[in-house]
Length: 451
Image (cartoon, rainbow, N blue to C red):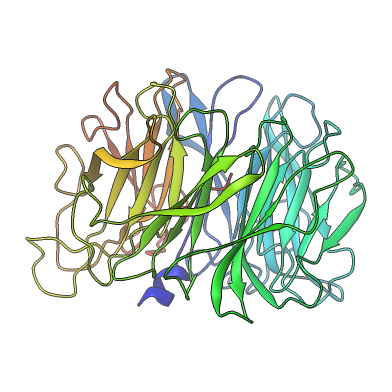
């Protein structure tokens, strides 16, 4: 069932435009997005922002058949498998990096497209492919940051076996800087699963971490690359993760949960242990600590109990929910069952927000959100909703308090919960379906943060 859930995931992200308004970008890369009869072609939906948050009535649907987008929608392109917002050409407008790891571009397999922002929104797209990796599923995941300390955004893209850094500047005509294949350790057999970027050390340069499976040790590992002038430092810092031989649908976020100036790395491993875990690696001057602290539903203060197959940590997203200066973490638990479900095997799902503080992330003051939360539409029903398939914390209203967006992709729904001084609330929340967002009668969708 977990593999089925994985294949039905949308993505969502926040895109900051020069207007200061924050739109919400959603994608449907998998079974939810058939385009012109082409199954799993993929689509991106941009919900435009206002001073009061996203206006779900104002949106744009973008596919590879959109006139200004490079390429053509084809079966299994997975356009939108990952989306990442950034100002890629430093013109003051937010752009959107969109991956299509199934795209065939001649003899090359896998691309990413930059949708360029302007005063009138996203106006055209330029496609980029691997410099030398042909049939490798290029850009299965990407992250953006200035990893070379030259003031220009770079892109790190992973394949089934490799890690590439393509340096900026990126241009609308397809130009970019030097591309480098970073072999984590010569001869080491790894299977990258995801990449996340952020500022971990205090040197001001963006860093990134790759999470993947070490074939030799049969364990999950983190490969941390520190950004620096001239390019990311190699070899990377290697960190093992506890009780986690299966990283299927792992998730990650970098944020300063203890406000010490270093970025901490939070990794959700939903198949770790009995019901999933979030592993926290404290940031240091050398990168993430090799000492790992794990949080589960059995941690003091965390609502619920660890049970199979909760999938605690299926998706994670960082943001400050109460404007106290400490980053907090939303954790998706899409297969959470609860008392009141009509029968066994029904998974309504839930989202738990863990609070940051001087001691970092803990269970203290954490709160769970589900269809029983006052104001949140829905019921326990007769089917699995899978609320928490993906989550996003973002301050859409610019008041210092992050709103919570969470998908229930088992029934094709998206929940938007306003932020308050005490955290997200179901009061005034809204519910949106795949149909209302302009993608027709496609029941399966979710959401996942793209940093």
